[in-house]
Image 1: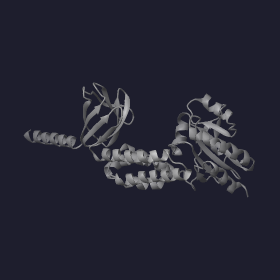
Image 2: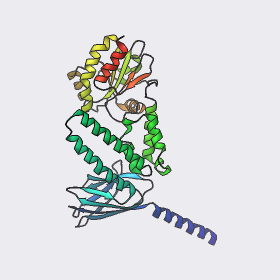
Image 3: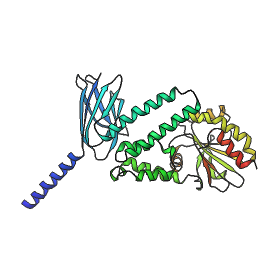
Length: 345
């Protein structure tokens, strides 16, 4: 009996030690917060904990980080700061009306430093006087992201940054970068999501066979992507939405290219991510989008987005007569140039 009690005591001590090992404390002192409701929300917007600051804007949260994660600090339900939850003492300081900084652990220290550098680049971008200068500054910002990721392969901030540069990588490059993170970070839920996304990307790159989609047109009739693919045809699979500004900027290029090359073999299968069917139909009519259009609603719409790794729009894929993906994300004049190359023979 004593032996079992000793083992139980040892197990309790071990569990206590593990808890302390992964414990975190968030200590805040923010001017302008006097007896305010403070909440800590997870990435899904669900409350982790809540408290009330004192008259001096001081507050404290304590917990155990089962795995590294991201949290949102809210004041009266309004988000005011991002906090990377990891073991250690995290400090929140500043003024609610100007700037709040989060420091104390590696992920939070590096996040704060990165934000300052990125903001300086953004300020230069907004005052740039030429497209060449804007492009150079944009490339500098991308390099900053990639360099910072490499400096943070052992913490959640680096993984979070990786989600912001997926458009700059192929699926395999994204998988390779993910594999460079430490085992602890690769075990997180976010790492699993990135891996699933990257693997989907590898299936939609040039040379891969397209995946069929069947969604409903404005009249409610199901239309399969495969009904357009075939000998002598090039099909542009285009994901867009009427509420998406960059998408609508691409529409004139789509209209012009379709009018020029439809009779020569160009088809467009437009997949709208609109939530409101009336908005979608109005956009089709006003912009003379006369090609095949369907709406990505229900499980079939969700599956289409997952299969083609749609993380942002506009996104498009050019499918050749043999069913192979020829190119992806052709924008502006590049779309017409590519179609001309293929069909002006």
